[in-house]
Amino acid sequence: MSLLNRARELDQRAFDAVAAAKLPGLEYVLPRLSRIANHSVLWGGVAGSLALTRQPRMRRAALRGAIALGLASPLANLVGKQAFRRPRPLIELFTPSARPRVTRTGVTLIPSIRSPWRLPTSPSFPSGHSASAAAFATAVAMEAPAAVAVPVGVTAATVAFSRIYTGAHYPGDVLAGIALGTVAGLGTRLLWPTMPGPASSRWTKPVEAVRGLSEDGEGVVVVVNPGAGANSGGRDVTRVLKERLPAAEIIEADGDLETTLKDAAGRAAVLGACGGDGTIRAAAAAALDQRVPLLVIPGGTLNHFARALGIETAAQAIAAYRSGCIARVDVGRAGDEIFLNTASFGAYTELVQRRERLEGRLGKWPALAVAAVRVLRHSEPADVYVDGRRRRVWFAFIGNCRYGARGVTPTWRGRLDDGVLDVRLIGAKRHISRTRAVAALLIGHLRLVPDYSTWSAGKLELEGAHGALRLTRDGEVGDAEEGTVTVTKAPAALAVFVPSATAAASAQTTTGRLH
Image (cartoon, rainbow, N blue to C red):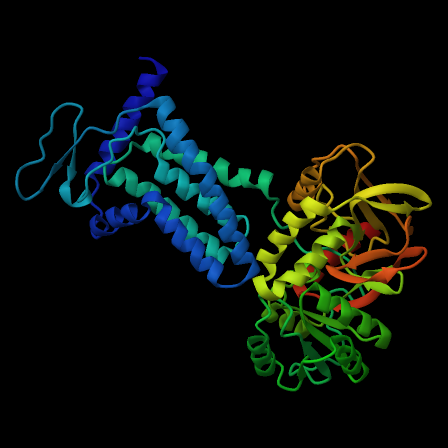
């Protein structure tokens, strides 16, 4: 007997064994679960529920799951089934109380209660339901915590088993679908890299609570920026802070944010700030002036610095404060202004300016899309002297510490205290279309253009070849800079609270490095 025939015989035996199994109660549950999973309706509902939590990790899990479904479903249903065209199992439905279980050769009896709906007639190999279930579960597991990933994985496994139990697929079809879906889920990393763990840095007192902190938040002054972005939820954050840190002073900024932050830092033992990267940058400047530690509370549309610290929610920020773990991180300085993530110039600055003019009417993300179209139509490369060398530049980013992602748009860092600037730019020395340059900016981790440069430096000097140079710092466009703008680093200048688990891992890394 050939190997293929032996595999088919084993597959048939396994299918018959499942058909003969008696699983009280599941006769009602599994067929309905299988039907809900038709056309990935079940997974679309789960993805929607995750997105509605408004938690960044859950939203990333939902988006990655949707991408995985978009890969797995056509591979299974349009490619796999048409390539193999394996017939469905031969089954006969029966009612156990009506007649004895007698079947013809090659036909398997299935209780009618398990298949109340008409079975599909498309080819059987591989199982599309199983491929979609495995793809979604794999993708969610790459982003979500175990409390979410495990139930999703169990549900996916149940859906896959239901396809055998209802007589729709052989076990081999299901196993092939699971394998295909798992590969599709893992393959999403090629399109969208997974979010790495928190960046490391050195600690004032590794994994030890900072003395003098109060559990109820005495001495903490938190400035909440209600207009920080779509995720700010200023009133909700204020309520949570008042409940968990009742002794803290909570201020909702309704005027000049920088002045409010400076006043708050002047009387605070700990300065807290809730908002996006622009708000946190302003708070860091105030904390540096007054030499107080900064408590970062993510609350904006983009929260890159908070995520680098391992903080994604207000609850995690409060837990970090109570842990007493403080990291010292580098601060970049471009001219008279600081930045915590990146400084940039070129067409990206024009993109941000156009978006800011439109977002009051359209919202942030629609405004970004419209701004990108207009930049594609009208933008020109910037003429800039970079360390005395004249260059024509489409986009340029200067990262505060080395970034791990490839491409012109940095997204994550391994460390926050390495003392270097990460310089990345798309030049216009060769003929590069606006479309190609903007595509490289938006996709980020792919090198789409030939005139791409990246290097590390401790200092950088910039000067506009035709007058003032306008820089963007952490997504905020500043005033035009006349003359030479020096970009430098202040190593380990800012003290920030981090989660204790992050502190423990970083402390071990630091200890190993010292030994």
